[in-house]
Image (cartoon, rainbow, N blue to C red; front, side, top):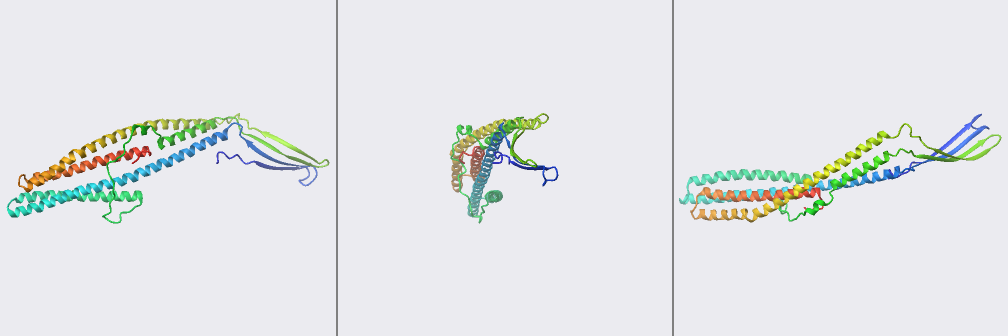
Length: 349
């Protein structure tokens, strides 16, 4: 609106008197003047202002994408830390159950005191790991509350969600426009329009019209028409033009550099996302199920007196470690998808 608004007209009133303003021999001129742009400055100003508006709008899209990514990351970090706490708690509970069983066997003469102490040591370590996981969950919940304004009303409140994404990201999405680049393109367009506007040397033309009234022995009234054109002899706007030209080159350079950076970053995140998805799915189908089977066999074998207690503890630790490794892979895959969606908001998280 400001760039497209014409300058206000100037109303002029001049009165000249020989023997005072009220006596004979006075002259009164009433005029109105208006500046006109015959060389396209206003059109270029409007073009630059439109580009500035596009830059502001895409800047808002960038900010929305950043906020959405922060909230999504905070959400799945809570889901991730909840799952880790559950894995650590289950491992500790399994050791507690194993400790109770071994104490009973000790009383029956089927186990040694060493077995009890060995399990107790592992249980203390499991308590420490569970406490650390609980502290990490409190931190994640605080970050989520800060990002969303939502509060966990009790320690039993939990967020529900699948860590492993179901979205399949195609390469074609990376050829789409990202608001980061759209904002820089708009800024480059605005700088180009300002450069063109600064390069116009021809000045605005001021045209005036009015009425001239002469009071005296011979009263006379006439019309006036005037044209005023500044002569660009000394100030040819070279400083402003060089400044605008430098800003345009800088904006275009930022656009080229950012385009290369974003494309490279997006391609890397896409490859990382695909690799992590494949690894998480493969790990879930092989190593995780194998560790659970090993845990089941170890417990059954220990109950039958076929293996020693340290072998059971090793099997329980392996199952716990496999669960945590699986959660890490899933969380990393989710983080890669969130990073992609921050660059390209059209990607579903």
